[in-house]
Image (cartoon, rainbow, N blue to C red):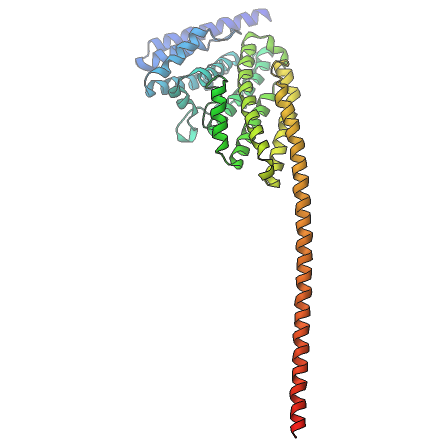
Length: 351
C-alpha cells in the first residue's frame, strides 16, 4: 500500500509538471500565466493546504481588469471540473473559499455570477468520487460537503446583499446591519433567517469520517468554515433580536415560520459541536433562541385565544342578527295582517 501511495504522489507531481510545461508552451500568453498560478495552488497528492503565497498570487488577479479576473475564475473552474483527484478538488475549493473571504470585489463578482447569466460558479460536485484508495474515497465526501457549503455561502450573500465574511465583526458593522434590519419588512427578515439557517444545516451535514480532521488540508478547511459559522451566528443573533421585538406584530403564520426556523437551528447544535469541538458554542445565542421560542409560543397561544374569542363574538353577533331579522319579518307580517283586517272592517261598516 505504501508503494502505491508513493507511486500516486509521483504521478501527481508528473501531471502537475506536464500541465505547467503545457501552459508555458501555450500561445495564449495572457491566460497561460493564470493557469500556471492555479496549478501551483492546486497540486496533486500533498495533504497540506496550498501555501499562502500561492493563494495570494491567485487573489492578485482581482486587482487588475475584470477580464483578467474572469480568466482566473475560468481557469480555476476548469481545474476543478477537470480533475478526479480528491486533493486537487479540495485545494480548488479551498482557493475559491479564500476568494470569497479575502478576494477583491471584482474577483468575487466573477465568482458569484449565476450560471444562467454566463457565470461558471456552479460547482456541481454532488457526484464526485475518487476511488483510488480508501483515503481518497473518504476525502471525496469532504469534497462534496465543502462544495455544498460554498454554494450555500454564495446563496446567502445574494440574499443578504453582501458577502458574509467581507468584514470582521465590529460594533460599526453590527450597527449598520441593525439599521438595515429596522428598515426591513418582517417577511424579508424571515426569508433571510430561512437562508441563514439553511446554511447552518449544510455546514452541520458533515461527513461521517471526522477522523480526517487530523489531515492538515481538512483541518484548515474546517477552520475556514468555522469562521463562516461565526459570521452566521452574528447574523442570526441580530435577526432573532429584531424579530423578537416584533413578536406582537407578527401574524400566527409568521410566528410559526420563525419557530420552525429556530427549531431547525437547534437541531444542528450537536453536530456543530462535534465538528468544531465546542469552539464556537456561543451560549448567549442559544439562550436567546430558547427565550424567543418561549415568547413565540406564548404569543401564538394568545393570538389563537383572541381569534377564538372573536369567532365566538362574531357567531353570537350573527345569531343575534338572525334573530332580529326573523323578528322584523314576523312583525312586518303581523302589521300587514292587521292592516288588511282594518280595511275590510271599514268597508263592511260603511255598507
